[in-house]
Each structure stands twice: as C-alpha cells, then as structure tokens.
Amino acid sequence: MTPKDDRRIKVGVLGCGPIAQAAHFESAAKARNAELHAICDVAEDLLERMAWTHKPAKTYTSYDAMLADPALDAVIVATSDAFHVPASIAALEAGKHVLCEKPVGVSVGEVEALKRVVVKSGRHFQIGHMKRFDAGLQSAKNFIANEMGELLALKAWYCDSTHRYAMTDAVQPLMVRSAKAKRPTGDPKADLESYYMLAHGSHLLDTARYFGGEIVEVDARLRQRFGAWCWFVDVAFANGAFGHLDLTVAVRMDWHEGFQIYGENGSIIGKTYNPWYYKSSEVDIFHESTGATTRILGADGHFYRRQLEGFAEIVLNGAPMTGADIDDGVACMRAMAAVALSVRSGKAVRLADVSADT
Ligand SMILES: NC(=O)c1ccc[n+]([C@@H]2O[C@H](COP(=O)([O-])OP(=O)(O)OC[C@H]3O[C@@H](n4cnc5c(N)ncnc54)[C@H](O)[C@@H]3O)[C@@H](O)[C@H]2O)c1
Image (cartoon, rainbow, N blue to C red; front, side):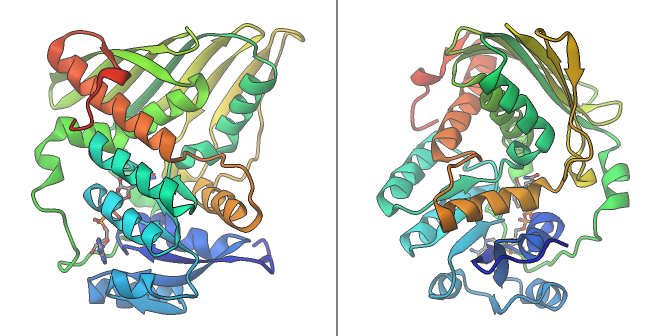
C-alpha cells in the first residue's frame, strides 16, 4: 500500500450503506492524502459494525454532531439520492468541503439552490462521478485535449446487465444492512423511469459531457419491453458535434458500457467494466499521424480512491478540479430532466429551456 503523506485531509463519511462499505471507507483508508476520521449513521448497529471494521477516530449517530467536529475537513455524502442536497448544504454551511455521491440531487431546482450555497461557502465541492478517475477515460480525455482536434461525433452506452448481481456478489464484500437505516419518504424505485435515469443515466450523461463538452439539446425516445428500459438519445453538443447515447436497463448479456469518439486526428473506442472489478477501461486510441493505436495497460483501477485523492489535492494544495464540479452537476441534472421532457413530448428539448421546478 502507498504510504500516507504527512499532510492529509480528515474525512467524515455520512452513511454506512453499501456505497460506503464497497468504496468510501476503503478509499479513505488507502488514500495517500486522506484519512477516515469519522463515520456517521443513524443506524447504531450498522455504525458499530463499520466502526469495528474500519476504525475511524470518531463515530456519530448525529450528522450535526459530526459537522460540529472542528478536526473534520471534509464530508463524503454517501446517502440515498434525496438526501444529497440537504446533507451537502449542511456540510458546506458548517465550513466543510464536500465530495457528494452521484446523482448530485433529484431536481434541477434543488441542485441550482445547492450551487448558490457552494459559491457562497467558498468550500470545494465535487460529485462522485468516479469514472473521471478511470485511467482509461483519462487517457481519452488527454488525447481529446491535446491531439484529437475537432470532434465530429460521440457515441456512448451504459447498459446494465441482468446478470450484474451474479457478477458483483462474487467480488464485493458482503453488504451489512440495518432496518434502522434512514430512508427517503416514499420508495424511489416506485418511479423506475426517474430512478434508472438518476442512478445510471447520470453516469452516462457525465461521461458524454466529460468528453464532448456542453450538451445544448436532447431528442430522446424510451421503449420498455420484457421489463427492460431502453433510452436512445440524440444529443447536440455546443461545439456542433453529434452525440448518440444508449441507456438500457438491463440488457440480456454482460455489463455493456463504453464509448466511441470520432475526431479530426484520430478516434477512440472504449470499453468500461462494471466498477466493482476495479479495472480501468480498455481504451484504444487511434492516432491518424502515426497510423498506430495506443492503449494504457496495468493502470491503477481504484477510481474511488483516486477520486478522493484528487479531491484531497484540491483541498490541500489548490490543485485544479478534474472531477465533476457543481456546474457539471447542474448541467447533468438539466440534461436528465430534458431527456424526460423529450420522451414525454416526442420533441427535442433544449437544456436552457428546462425550468428550475423540473
Ligand atoms: N458512484 C457509484 O458507483 C455508486 C454506486 C452505488 C451507489 N452510489 C450512490 O451512493 C448513494 C448511497 O447509496 P447506498 O446504497 O449506500 O444508500 P443507502 O440508503 O442504503 O445507505 C445510506 C446510509 O446513510 C444513512 N443516512 C442517511 N441520511 C443520514 C443522516 N442524515 N444522518 C445519519 N445517517 C444517515 C442511512 O441510515 C443509511 O444507512 C446513492 O446516491 C447512490 O446513487 C454510487
């Protein structure tokens, strides 16, 4: 394991649920420039189990009490989606930096309200779009920035698999759950169109924006068959490039996620693995100048730890933000709302026309 740096941020994780157990506790323990200072959950049984395993310096059943801890530098918000915005606002107003799980929120209006608090607080705010810390995606991003020239078109797909739990159960730790866990009112899965878009579509739209830049308009269709949901979305990027996005939950095959990018001086084909394999994407970059393809191999695939290290670099040393910031969060939220509006109206929808109460 990489030795710890002398200067580290003290992190508190809000929520001891599956994402904290599978990603954030270990990331904080392994990150060279962060440490797991505190964990918080209203469910005492879960808190106790996780404290025993991960040995934070402090445990809290009250979020307010954790935020009042002067030693705490930053909070990882690892709760269900509906609590992301209120929990982030509370942390920012308590003077803490925030790394918040995706999707940043559940409506355009609340995410815009969060943006106002981020700006006012002067604290750092990053969204847990950890794919931006996948070394394969980063190699594509570098090529786009430095060599590719103009973008002609981008296709990206995110297709969950009917076999995902058979695969992920084999590699994830056994999840500990509690009947005392705090849940949002109402069942988020009661509206699957919204739930799938927030849970999975947010990743797809963030990846599309990471590579293609601002999205100005979407034209989306949604078809449901045999319990599967399939969105095909035509995307107009601000730079004039075409985009096509495919979100399917779930395909009757292996996890299927990736992208294809056509540029002036080369093209990219990427295959992304289910995150729980901690394997960086296989990204083939064809360079028009040499007629050769390059692919990075053997990269460190712990994108959850890498995103925390990137976040800590910003807090400690003022490094530039390479993750998704609050503006990315607002844009992603608008894009998801625009897709829903387009599906309903059968027409293309401009993101600028999405109202804050969507
Ligand atoms: N980036 C990824 O790859 C990825 C993967 C899976 C899940 N996620 C995201 O992670 C988030 C959390 O997912 P989960 O399945 O772990 O959620 P969960 O609801 O099962 O667990 C959240 C925990 O937070 C606790 N909690 C919530 N509000 C609290 C409060 N105010 N005070 C104290 N405790 C509180 C709950 O008691 C619960 O134990 C979701 O938004 C999901 O979209 C991201």
